[in-house]
Amino acid sequence: MNTPASPAVVLYGIPNCDTVKKARVWLAERGVAVTFHDVKKQGVPDDALGAWIAALGWEALVNRSGTTWRKLDEATRAAVVDATSARTLLQGQPSALKRPVVRWPDGALTVGFSPERFRQGLG
Image 1: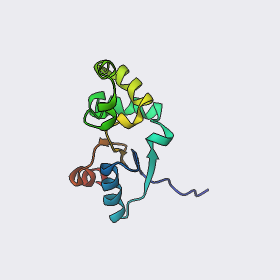
Image 2: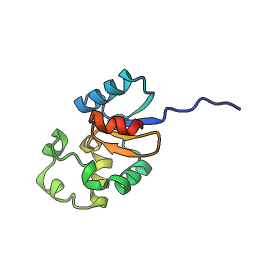
Image 3: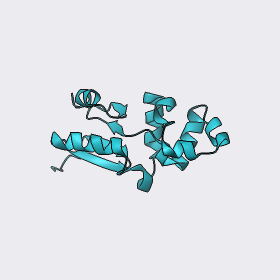
């Protein structure tokens, strides 16, 4: 039986994030089929988060320059010191995720947007 393949690129982010908007436009201009996962509405998938931390490191995933991070109280920010605490934060505050996280056709993961990184992701 022939079933349509799902898009090979999955982009995790928040629709109104400027960086996510740039990434989505860049991909659309190149005709890349993308599945968009809104982490604010759908949450950060627990199984995916574990893979992201393993592949990218927890430090790369926590957006310490964003509004969500700045709004956290000092004790909460100070408590993010390892993969376990970062995971807890990102599950409870998905907007604290550095965006976008992208899973590429070969299974590789990237965080953030740059045209060069995206060209490499598409192979």
